[in-house]
Amino acid sequence: MIKKTKKKKAKKKIFLESLLVFFIAISPFLYKGYEYLPYNSNGDLTFFGFTLGSNGFSDAKTYVWFLTTKIVPLYLMIFWFLTSRDWWYHIIIIPIAMYAFQLFEVLYDSDDVVDTDNIWWLIPICMITIPFVYFIRVKLYDKHVHGIDLEAIDAELEELKAKGFDSKDNFDIKKKSEENQQDDISTISEDINEKLSTGNLENIFKNVQNRIQGWLQLKS
Image (tube, rainbow, N blue to C red):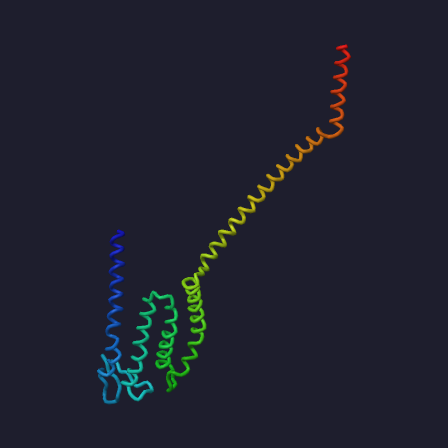
């Protein structure tokens, strides 16, 4: 089952890649194909029973030429965006949006002037895409040029933070142990001071003296 699934995925991948290669290979011919389409005496394009007018252009030939100048770069840009492995591939969204807006304008706008206001439609996309790509660029530059890996630094800080909590716990245990040792030392010191105090020593010497005197009297 696993081998069959892998084979299906491989076939699907090869088919899609072959399709991309095919459309990329024929892009020059599609770009110049408008010259060889069948136009009638009115300048309209008649193709498989479908008639395409000039749509505001001088004739249908000029209109088709304008469409191909937008469609061919548009799908090439989309292929590039979908297959790119570079870190900056998000910036390709901007030319994709430019060609898409230009195509939309010529197809649906009633204005006779084309490629005018669509530049303003790109501003919101540029405001999102450019800072995003620049942020990725800064991170890569810091990592590979300056040797600053923010993710590694964050991981190290988390590790140090975790060690800090452990050190605090160990410090508390050590502190308690030292306090207990100090208490024991203090108790021993107090016992020694008490036993070796001047009063105790004097009493001891007096007891020894009395015993010696008593022992001498018994001797005599």
